[in-house]
Image (cartoon, rainbow, N blue to C red):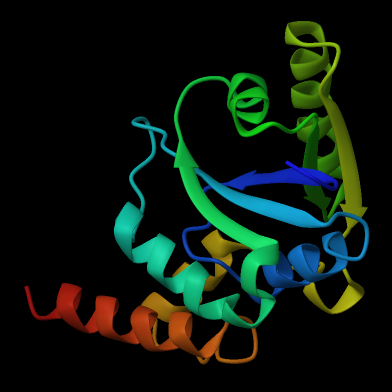
Length: 166
């Protein structure tokens, strides 16, 4: 890999405008980002892995070859090494994010000292948004169109319509 590559991991269930902001700001620092969806069998995502990949690709289509969408299971540091990166990019919102991210960064550092964690503060307008809150609001009929890419807004409406009809 020529250039600087960072891994941006998460569940992205679904991807939000806050996530997109981190990607776009990350691309000002790194030549390429891999948006890496963690496959966590203990979590029950609203969207399938395939749906999340499609939404992320559509939302980031303007970024071209500078963004790759992938999925992984197992240790993040091992995945980063397989991808040829030594950088994990994470976004931070509130103090509670910092505590959790700090613990994960220290564990990742213990597992592989060559892999570094880089943190970007979320833009103020996305500070209080999360995929969980967005899903909850959307499930109750709330308008989340200003918080997610249009493809995600459409898919949220479609998904909750399907759930109500079952």
